[in-house]
Length: 486
Ligand SMILES: Cc1ncc(COP(=O)(O)O)c(C=O)c1O
View 1 (cartoon, helix red, strand yellow):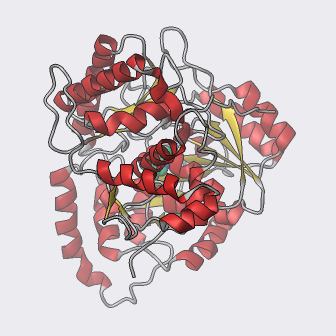
View 2 (cartoon, helix red, strand yellow):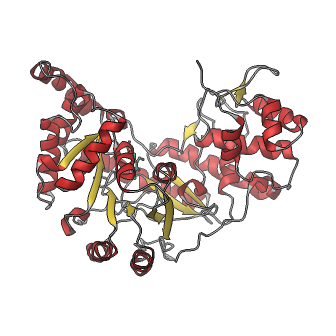
View 3 (cartoon, rainbow, N blue to C red):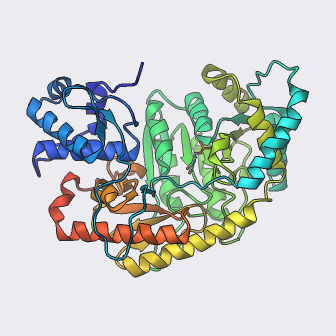
């Protein structure tokens, strides 16, 4: 049977959508559109019937009918009136004349920060994996910890980076997000507190919420006047650890998503000491660690304490389609993660793991080209932003895939809502925070080649101009609530 969204679930996703700033049907349509673009309402699901949604929201049926009609007209709902519309994204949105740019056929996706495969290398790894496969076919094929060749290759990389590691300390997972879910289910939940960098990676926030844990956001200090990396606010982080004693902390110290910051070794050492004394398990997401664009070296956080739990992935260094990640932890802790893992699935696919073992074994091979492409893209993006959106303040990312931009006004959600009219898809700033924060920020990836980045930035600039010309378009906005931190 095809998927559908029930009215209560939709009402929960909508949150407090009705600000009264403009007609309710328009506000409702705008927020649903944003949820679809953001990926929080999946594509091709049936929305609740008009009657059921009107009842749940306590609105008149005419309001819901008009909102759905608007969404149909814009291509975000398919199916005729009377039938339950299915969600979609318009293949090509309403053409808007933007001087100097030809709108691309599809929409440029600035909501994803991911690169295509390191083609040739990944393909070759799969060809080699097929050659390796016969040796494993006599086994059962169930391996809840990962195939030995891959665990060993990952362990060797940690050892080479200064963190002596054996294969027994590695659990192979289907990506970093899977790894985080295993860790959360083991260490958090039941209203326990999980400290996070703020802003942070949206899917991690969603996973923490879904685990039933409470998010404890510790703000990253704003970028300095020259947009230089301001690092982490260790004083606040340490005070929060001491006062709140969270069960776990989820941090992205290596080319943090979305800011691209890198935590210094000094800060790493202090953080580890503070977590030890508060009894907090430090979980670090190193998914972006290989994307080091400015050189300079830091030690993996696990180099400072055996109690640190590290999460890694091949998604950003090689290809997200591999769906291969891992957890590195000490023996007892790893056993707990393995026990949790088998409640979720019984192991990863063998051919992917064989290919991943090849890729991890010669990890650096495709990286040089990837890093130089990213450096060029980063320079192009920062130049384009300076030229076309001079009052935006992008932070200079030291690595990773994205630039975190401070906007002149709190208009991130409004920009995201109108972006498809300009041929682009965005992820609104508040997706990166708790409690509606970051309305004045937008993450812009530099994963597209410079020509497409130019189209994207011109489109951003045109969208910004439209907002400036009609400030009432910001009607879906609420004032950003800066989450209070103890
Ligand atoms: C910090 C961070 N963690 C995890 C992920 C997801 O990784 P995976 O594809 O391995 O699940 C991403 C992807 O953007 C990321 O940026």
